[in-house]
Image 1 (cartoon, rainbow over the protein chains, first blue to last red):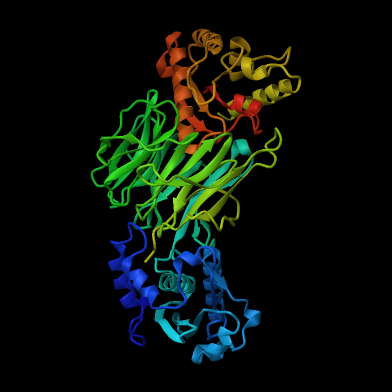
Image 2 (cartoon, rainbow over the protein chains, first blue to last red):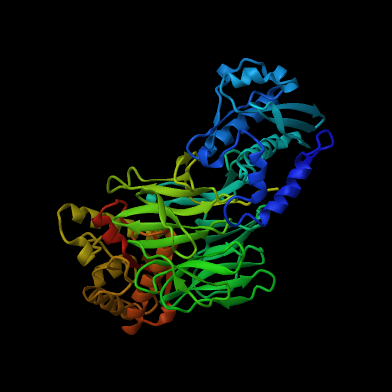
Length: 453
Length: 160
């Protein structure tokens, strides 16, 4: 995917460098540059957007069916975020072709659009060049103009990149559309489930299975490079953590632990995996260096220490332990020292995962016979339960920390397991826009990739 | 291995059938899958269930301590292992569905270990017993009620 910005100064090249500049400032709240960017536009108001989505018109891009397909993917992304309201195309006055040439802003203003996206696709051989422009309808200004050149087969990724540019320019924070989700595809009766590793784009497209289901796979997680996956497998009878390359190759067991290994997660620098290993009556947390394959034990607190997850700066690890009697969340230094409990609400707490922004830890809470997905600050303050129901667990953050995915089981309604299902859902970290994610089969254990580019 | 699984399913069916008549199945855990007059192969899963009374022990919620009322089952199993010195087995730990997947995998492992430890304390050589956890992911009872949960908080001794 090569952005071609010659025609439009201030396009993707500028954006990429701005992204790089923003990255360091992403840890808490909105990035300063992002604020400045949206302050120049009348469209954007991030606080209002949470309850009042931005009305945006995305007519088909000029240039045939691919132009229409790209617009459709962009509309779907923006709508599913809950932060945009795509204007119904039936209301459009100006034709897509004409808008792609010169937008007649009045025609878009009267149908309620505050932002307008126009574009054009030029196919040449097996390559395609897609240029798009983002317009602020009220002041009649171009906010962004970018062109992408890529193999035609990659048109979906271009649509996701365009969606991310729109999201970032209008909301002042990075998007998350050019990402994938790895998860466990489940089928078959409840006591003999087939559990396969599967991967799809965040919008459910380009779905494929990565393992054949001859042995159960569980709890996949992405490497920061989005090309490697750590997961748990029963492939050799004994459940162990394995590594798997998306480029190809066979799953490879990680470490030489005598017992079961589970709940792997990569360190933010990608050089090691933190996991839990059972020994005797305990489960302890270990760090496995991916270069030397040396193992280092981080906890020995007694009890079951599972589900470790690094802070994005790599300095701390949050995990789940029953050392104090029942399952609670603890934070310790990355070297294993100074563990302190952070969860003190009602019930048991599990599956902690640190937001890529660093500001929140998401978790599963089980209390009063109900499950819930919530967030708290890393010091345990500010706990909020975003959604509650039966059998929901395992949150994973989109790379911008704004959206989470998790899975939800429905209870069996009879003794033969009838009515049991397992599905993926997503929710905004502010607790709205809860949606079920469509997958070809039952699904569990979603893990969101970093941005692919 | 296939035979073991099949017998496990038969035992579960027998449990479920018993539940219908409101017996205290979960508490006693009698996996009595045999029919009178059939010939039971010595050293088989069926033989274990028949001689020891059950191939499984049950646990309290979120606990992996072998309850006093479950110890006689393991003592019976240990006696059966003594009488069948060539047999090896895998102790399978399970958990009910009211926990998270990862924690329940660890909990199921701890239950399998606890069960194995009692067998070893009663004279079974540790080398004859392996352990594995299925957490909440391969339930024995398929429902979502107290009765099913009680049956799924279990360690099953599966003859290899």
